[in-house]
Amino acid sequence: MTTYDVIVIGAGPVGENVADRVVQGGLTAAIVERELVGGECSYWACMPTKALLRGGAALRAARRVPGAREAVTGELDVAAVLRRRDSFASNWRDEGQVSWLESAGITLYRGHGRITAERVVEVSGADGAATTLTARHAVVVATGSGALIPDVEGLRAASPWTSREAVAAKEVPGRLAVIGGGVVASEMATAFSELGSSVTVLARDGVLHLNEPFAGELVTESLRDKGVAVRIGAEAGSVKRNADGTVSITLTDGEQIHADELLVATGRTPNTGDLGLESVGLTPGAWLTVDATMRVAGAEGWLYAVGDVNRRVLLTHQGKYQARAAGEVIVARAKGEPVDDGEWGRHAATADERAVPQVVFTDPEIASVGMTAAGAEAAGTRIRVVDHDLGAVAGAALHAEGYRGRARMVVDEDRGVIVGFTAVGPDVAELLHAATIAVAGEVPLDRLWHAVPAFPTVSEVWLRLLESHGR
Image 1: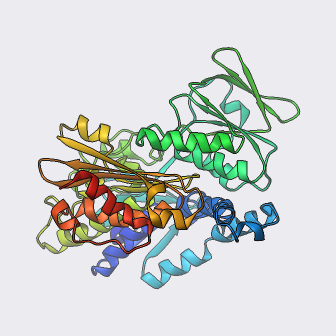
Image 2: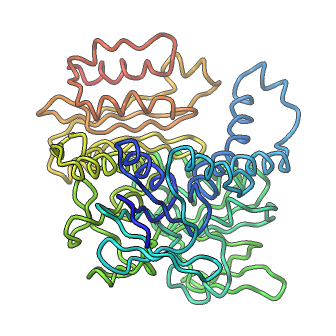
């Protein structure tokens, strides 16, 4: 039996950040990982996904500027795109991440970690050997989430792609069908259509329906312009993998769709099914409910859950934000120091509810933070919605010929602050942090007038939004 101050189960970016914070705070930490150190984001999500998308985005950008457009004479080099993707996934090897753990003073245990009692974790190695670890202060669950496979007849037996198989694909299928209309579905439809696939998207609930409506509309239009068949309202009734390896999807209305591969992108499920939660009175396979400092409800203060597994926000950067708060509050509690867990406190993940930034790397990009207009209204906020045509901003017109886009700010009229912002258009991701600061900092509109955007940049849209609001 080996004892540490803190044991972290899951060595993705979130788990790594918790462990690093507690070690920097003077405690000891062990981290348990059954797959690759670095987690989903490093090998099957954030990094390789954006590497797949970047080549197409760069080519589009060049073609939208006269002079550069004429210099572009070819199409994407698919093999080169895949090689670059591989490099950003470290060729699915984790030596670099393991080296970082060692340099940070974090002990790594490879194997499957299960909680067997309060503050006790048993690690089962690939060789069958078991190691028992005990924690003096806390056990942190950072096991993330996996792809949700819906209960559609024949779907599991058809061995569909999830986000992992799509992102790590060695070849581009001639025909790709996608079930889902969210971020993964939209980004992969963008990437594979630009890599040469004939793509069909079955978006039962619409495309990016959790965003402002105009965002999904612009992305849908763009996908269709690329030749993607976007089927709003279409629902798979059954799926079959044929003898020749192709896939047949029968829709609920009886129509059949045929493809070489099928990607299922309909949501996520928590990786808690074989974690030993039942040994401490919790439900296996469930999302873990936490307080503002990431302590798990019903675990008497020693168990924490950070990242996807607590279902607050399923985004890597937000999980790392939670990890910083959790790591530092664990240190504070271990040392008997004051806990700052009030709203916007150092040990509270307040931004999870107020100021979550996200970029969807489709064509056009979607950058958003805070609440949508519908979400703010549902919360009972008296709002004013201010929209502006991004294409009418001088900096945008210079940025790309025929620039099309739209920006929206959602204003809490009673407090005079922005509670939501969405921008849709080429390269709007770089507008997002300014909006995040405005929302998280609750900067009054009266003060924002003094944040003068440089001319001629796309950021001039801030001035136009303020002018339209008139405050």
